[in-house]
Image (cartoon, rainbow, N blue to C red; front, top):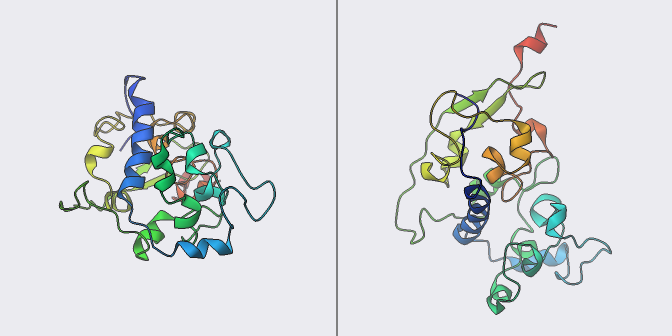
Length: 216
């Protein structure tokens, strides 16, 4: 398949980014073992190690590097809404989630270990239909090619989450680039927000040997 999209309205991209964050947080049923977080941080306002508190603008939070960013300060939730204090803090809910070699939460393993139970819809009554095929992106220069696995994504996302607004379902219709991803387009709509950042563990995407390099 391809590389990412034609012209899209600039106004839809940030909306999709925030929607993706809010939708995932709303759909996840977290483990109730919140007290396990005590072994990592005492509380969000008084972390156990000095200097560990981060702000969202740095792109760091508990999911990526174990840093504490209270929901009222994450740049997503409305800090003036008293209801924000009723939500479970990520540093509590994610304390025992498995992480990859770079210390980033591995959501696939978290799902398969039964630590979360995503709803198939807002009501939880619909069924999820998985799709099991990969797309290989080959315009990666000297880097290994990129494998996009549909299975891991469709275990908790419907096709409409990505198609056709983010990715046109047509070969050659999506000019994906790292620059666009880092700026929050294509894969970057979710990766770097609710999924692992595109700049912190290259091997999770660039996992297919590049035959051009092997011949050198």
